[in-house]
Image (cartoon, rainbow, N blue to C red):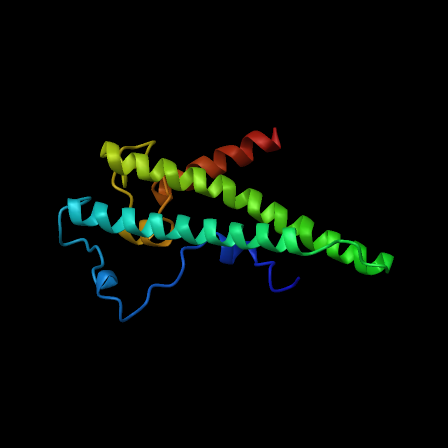
Length: 155
C-alpha cells in the first residue's frame, strides 16, 4: 500500500526532465521574444507530459483499488488500509483539479494568453512558469491576491 501513496508535493510537480533527451535541451530564456512559438511549444509539451504522468498515476491507483481488498481480518489493519486509501483518493481528487488547471493553461496557449498575468496583463516570469507552468498571475499579483484573501478571512 505504501508504494501506491505519493506525497502531494510529488503529485503536483512536473516530472524530471531526462538530461540526454534531445527534445528537452531547449530552455526558454529572456533574450528571446516572450511567448514566441518555440516557448509556447515548450510549455505545451511540458504541460502535456505532466498531464500524462498524472493520468498514468491515476490508472495505477485504479488498478490497485481493483486488485486489492480492504478485507483485512484485523480491525487495526483494516483501519490503516482505509486511512491509506482515503489519503490516496484525496490526492487523486487534487490531481483531478490539477488536470483542469493544466487544460486551462493549454487553452490559454491556444488563445495566445498563456504566460500573461490575468490580473495585470504583464508577462509572468519564465522562472515562475518553469516552476509552476499553470501559473496565471505574476508573483506580485499572487502575493496581493493571497494578502487580500487573508484579510477577508480575518474579517
